Amino acid sequence: MAYNFFVKSDIVFGCGSASALPEVLTQYQAKNVMVVYDAGVKAAGISEKVLGFIEKAGVNTVIFDKVMPNPTNELVEEAAVIAKDAGIDVFVAVGGGSSIDLAKAINILMTNPGPIGNYGGIGMVKNNVLPLIAIPTTAGTSSEITNVSALIDTEKVCKYVVIDDKIVPSKVIIDPEFTRTMPVSVTAATGMDAITHAVESYISNMATPLTQYNSVKGLQILHENLPKVVANGDDMDAREQMMLGCIITGFGFSNANLGLVHGIAHTLSAHFHLPHGMANACVLPYVMEFNAESCPDQMVELAKAIGLETSGNVDADKYLLAGELKKLIGLLGIKTLSQQGIEKKDFEMLAEDVLKEPVLNFNPRQGITKEQILDILEKAY
Ligand SMILES: [Zn+2]
Image (cartoon, rainbow, N blue to C red; front, side, top):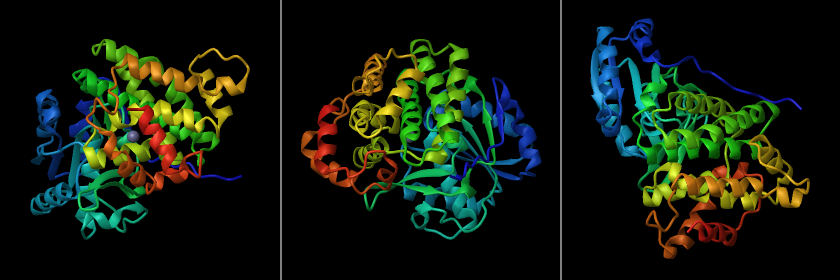
């Protein structure tokens, strides 16, 4: 059977790679640059370093530093007005998924009419966008290499995604040094997001040999190195490996898509503003127990890939991965749903909204019911 595998990333990778920024801006003939980041990036002194490199290129700079976790339509529209007024011709996004996703969305509105909500879905962006340079400071979302921007529609109270090959960042600068100051809780949550991407894409019903090759390799690297960076944030070898694992996994999941874990996480973030990685991590093992009924062989393959000892009995071995993920979230201090402030009275509403999530179409176990989602939420409580 024939299949597509899409990769469109131009990557500079390695410690010190941020110094390439002035040259990249010159290549794009940048005159007016919007730099998009959040308060965490500023507090860590990273924006200062990036702005220093941009200064060397001799361009005008407009700063948009109001990025919030789970960016909203309103924030996109506000930033787009500023960018248009300033005649922005190149974007630089510095940060995690929220900064990069926001920059992708602002960029859409530079060459396409608003509102941004019109572009939810696959391939809805008509006109090509401006150059966007992505500089990730977390190892998690892989937004720097994907064609996805995840946004919150505050009116409909849902997280939706714009998926379009036109919005892939035109240049990616991956400097692991920028992840050194990431707080432990963010390191753990974003790392678990990456592990969720690897697992969900491997078992996705869109998976192909090319995506699975990336997903399994990514999982091996992330599983080995996430505990190391959480234990010691200065372990730069492990930090670099996390960035590598993220990129490899990103190539996999941006082609194979995700599943029920992300469906639940999007709903939790839309209603209760849970950070994306935390929302994924606390339900991941329980969704994998649930999915194991539909894809036992793949569950065993993943368990073997990360070195778990199998018995040869698939009925027992299919739960090994879920067991290991439970241990991992315990080790990393991932909070349960109740510890993140979710109350049981909201489960019914959440379960009903999860059923509306388009990403459920790619989950290996189909025919998902409200009762099954309630059971997963109960286990993650
Ligand atoms: Zn994710």
